[in-house]
Each structure stands twice: as structure tokens, then as C-alpha cells.
Image (cartoon, rainbow, N blue to C red; front, side, top):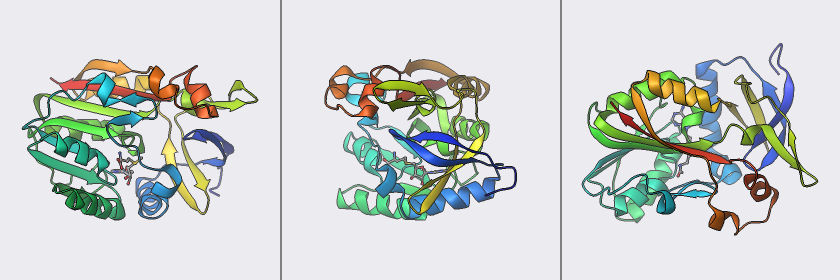
Amino acid sequence: MEKNAVSRTNIIGGGEVGQAVSIHMKKDTVHRANSLFWDTKGNDLLGTTALPHYGAFISEEKCQLLGDITGKKVLEIGCGTGHSLQYVGERKASELWGVDLSQEQIKKAEEHLTANGLSAKLVCSPMEEECGIPQNYFDIVYSVYAIGWTTDLEATFCRIASYLKKDGKFIFSWSHPIHKCVAVENDTLLFKKSYFDESWYSVTLGDSSLTLSDRKLSTYINVLAKAGFIMEELIEESDEDMLALREDDFAKKAKMLPATFVIKARKQ
Ligand SMILES: C[S@@+](CC[C@H](N)C(=O)[O-])C[C@H]1O[C@@H](n2cnc3c(N)ncnc32)[C@H](O)[C@@H]1O
């Protein structure tokens, strides 16, 4: 444990994680820890979240944020295993691109897309860094449960703005920050952590560890504005039909507060 590290409660996915430790964020250390996590146990421990789902209880089929993708150049940030790229590829995007920190996720995406008769330009890089993706080129940039992994939100949103054509759309989902603060105990919702706490922490899951920070919703919105985006839509509501399919603690919580948020923004 780092000197001055403080052990605290954190909630990842549906459940409380015991060994969250506050850390001082060093970009290279975070990238090393998180690429190792996604190269090895990431999918086993956190699964895959892919379109048409933006998260457990929000779907593209209901929300229709992407619109008609036919002929559009599309880039996914944190493309993971390539399942979302498959979704947009099957809806006739003209070009598929993806960027991901993990070499193993890029390999899985490549294999998955090839097995489904699709191809994409896949780049292994942190999303927050220059990596040769063309500028003023894309009609749509989207991301499903990956943006929150960035070590530098402002640099990431500025890069995404630079990749988009004027009026291009940026759509992304992430865990709602209030969801990360509240746990279910004996059918009661309990606050476990301050909503305002954006400090970095490290969590051990099995024999792997990951490093994150939980940013406030206002942080995402203010940084989007700073990077030159206009907000078009913010979705927080869980879909009633999807909620009705589950009865676990995660679903109980999602009936009372948002589990996921999705933002659709436009480059000015
Ligand atoms: C929850 S997964 C997203 C899964 C993806 N939506 C899918 O359908 O497979 C998060 C992804 O973000 C990637 N990631 C983590 N930190 C990153 C960073 N700084 N830059 C780019 N990708 C990153 C991980 O390697 C992982 O593939």
C-alpha cells in the first residue's frame, strides 16, 4: 500500500468492494495496472457491456441516440472485445475504428469482427494520448463504459472533438456516479462514500487490481463544454422493461437511483 493511502469503501458493478485504497494518481502506473487488468481478468470479472446496451438498463433500441449509421465513419473509444463495433458494422457504417489500452482486448476485437465478416482499424493506445487517429474525419464517436477509465478527461474530450467533423456526434455511457456511492444492505440503501470525492483509488478483485476515479456528473458536463461540445441529451432513467427482468440488489438499487448515464453531445 502506498504511503498515506487510505482504505475505503467502493462499489464496482453491482456490489461493494472491500479493499479500495486511495492513491496518488500517476498516469503510467494507472495505464500499466489497467492494461494488465484488461489483458487478463477484466472480462471474467466485469464482463462485457456492448451495444445495443449502454449499461444494464439503457438500450440503444429504446433511446435511438445513434440514428441511421448507414455510410457513417464511426470510432469507438475503449472498444474492448469489438461487440459494439459489430453492432454498428452490421448497421452499415462505412468505416469502423476502435482504440483500446489493452493489446489483448484489441486482439479479441480483431478476432470477433473477423469471425463476423467485418473489419476495423484498431489502435492500441490510451484514449488520452495522440495515436494517429485522423482529425475532422468521423461522423460518430461513441464509447460504452470506457470513458471513465481515462486519466485525463479534458485531454480525452479535446481529442474526441478533434476526431469529429463539425456537427459530429459523441455518445458515451458510464456508471452513474451516484450509483458508486450507495450500497444495498438488508433492502436499505446506504451512502458509503461522498458523491463529491473524485480522488483516485485502487481496488483488488480476486488476484487482479484496477485503478479508477469516480467523477461527478457535473465534471463530465463541464469538461464537455470546455472541449467545445453542445449537450443534446442526458439519459439517467433505467428502462422499466429491462428492470423487470431482474430482481437482484443491483436492480433494486436501479429502481431508486440511476445505475448508468448516457450523454449525447454535438461538436460545434
Ligand atoms: C468496460 S470495458 C468496455 C467494453 C466495451 N464496451 C466492449 O463492448 O467490450 C473498458 C475498456 O476500456 C479499456 N481502457 C481502459 N483504460 C483505457 C484508456 N486509458 N484508454 C483506452 N482504453 C482504455 C479497457 O482495456 C477495456 O477494454
